[in-house]
Amino acid sequence: MKATIQLCTYNRRALLERVLDACFEQTVDGDAYEVVLVNDGSTDDTRALVERMRPLAPCKFVAIDRPNGGLAKARNTGIAAATGERIIFIDDDVLPLPNFVEEHLRSGTRYPSNIVRGGAINVESFDDLPPPVWSIRNYSGNYFWTTNVSVPLETLRNVGGFDETFAEYGWEDIDVGLRLRAARVRATFNRRALVYHYKPPLRGASLDAMQRQARAQARTALELVRLHPHWRAYLATGNYAAARALHGAIARSGVAAHCRAVLADVKPEAVLSKHQERAARRLATEAYFEELGK
Image 1: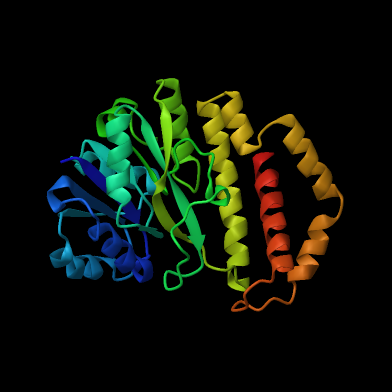
Image 2: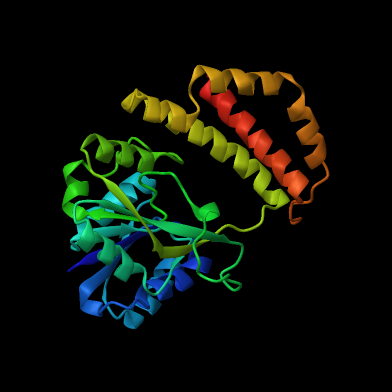
């Protein structure tokens, strides 16, 4: 088996059918790759969908149900089940293009020891997709971003997979990337290994969740710098003196009160305007740095 597409899901039944369809519609032969899906304790009808999709798989399709335990544990479950020489990670809100596996394998053949990073085009709907052309605005500087990345399976197992102390949102893939860097695993970028990444417009109902997610991300940021007391981790998380001072000054300036006023009358179902979106992101950033300083 040349490749494993590995993805985890939690209560994304509405997107998962399209995602699996895209995984099954690859240009490589069905015996060249497999799909390993980990259902991390979904409470919707994800399991029923998976059983309905099984007969449509042209490749080996492994679906594993496990109690909800967070992404790092779910990823490790998928790694344990994988048999491909190269493991390709995506998320459950990602549509890979038909040549996705082919391109990861092509780069992997040229650079067999390397991480292969691909591009992600953000879209608000899977029903209205732009041309599949990568541009610099789709670029992510993350060394190991599980939205679209591959690595030799043996290499990943040798560095220990995902650290399961990352139980909340964020940074578990950055941690893997830092360990791969420390092991001197190089990375190459293939702009033809593309995915569409679902990023729906922000609505009023998202505001509280944004705050909670920002605080969870700050707590896991502290775990990241504890594990990696290195300038890359400090820079990635913003946990350094200049950044903390800047955001402290912004917090004292009264910007947060203005942002709350901008969002005060937003209805839960309303799509945020660009001005409201900036205000929401500013409040999430303030929550992040406030939690980081605790």
